[in-house]
Image (cartoon, rainbow, N blue to C red; front, side):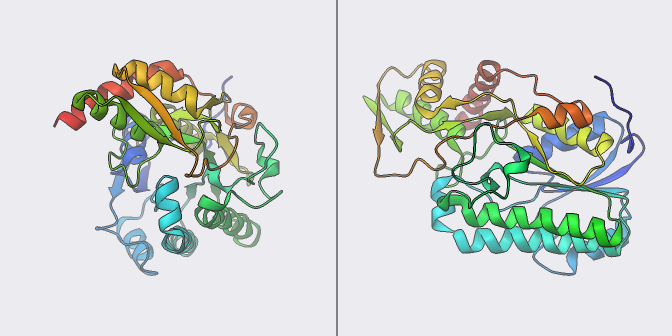
Length: 317
C-alpha cells in the first residue's frame, strides 16, 4: 500500500530531541537514510525543562520539522520510585516544546506518546479510540497521563492555531542500544542481562518480578524508527496512531525464549510480591496501515536474537 509523502524528508532539516538515546539514534539514521539533515540533541545540550530552551534552539537552527523523543522513562521499578519526577519531566518537556514549535512557526511536529497512557483494563487489542476510557495502570500512570496530556495540547493547538502535528503511540520497544542499567531498563534488556550474568556466574536460578502471567507486545526499534519516519512523511490527521506488531506474549513465555537464546540452563522463579504492571498489553495496529501504510516487519524471534547478540558485546565491553 503506497501513500503520497505530504512532508518528504529528503532535503528537510529535522530536530530530533533525545536523538542520542536508544530509539533516537535509530530514528536519526532512518531520517538521514531518507535524505534529511538531522540535528540530534541531548538534555545536556538543550534542557527542555527550561521554558525558553526550545524556542532559542528553533530560532537559531530554523528546522523544518521537529520529532520529540526525549522522555524520562524506565521500567516498573523506576516508575514506582519516581512518579512525581516522571510526571513533571515528561509534561514540562513536551509542554515547552509544543508551545515553542507554535511560536516559532515549525512546519511539522511529531510527538511520541506511550502505551502506558491506555487504561489499566482496556479491551484487547487496544484501539486508539479507547485511550480515554479509564485510568492507566497505577505504577506508570503519572508517566502515561503526562504523555496523554500532550496529545490534548496538540489537538487544541491544531484547532486554535492550525498547528501541523502528529502523535504516535509505540508499544514496548526493544533492540540494540537499549539501556543496560537494571534499575531503569525495561523487561527485555533486564531479562537478557539477568540470564547472561547468571550463566557467567553458574547461578542455579534467576528470580523475575511478578507472576509471569502478564502479557506484553514488543516492537523492534528499527520498525519503530521506520514508523516514525513514515508518520512524519505521510500522516496529517489529529488522531493518535498506534505503532506495534499486534501480537502479544506472556512474560513467562518471553523469559523462556530469552533463556534459550542466552544459553542459561537454570530455573526461573517468579516473585509475586512485585507487581505485574498492566495485565495485558496488545495494540490494534490497523490505523497505521490504513492512514499511512506502515506495519511492523521484524519478527520477535529475529529481534530477540539480534538484541541478545548486541548485549553480549555491550556487557563484555
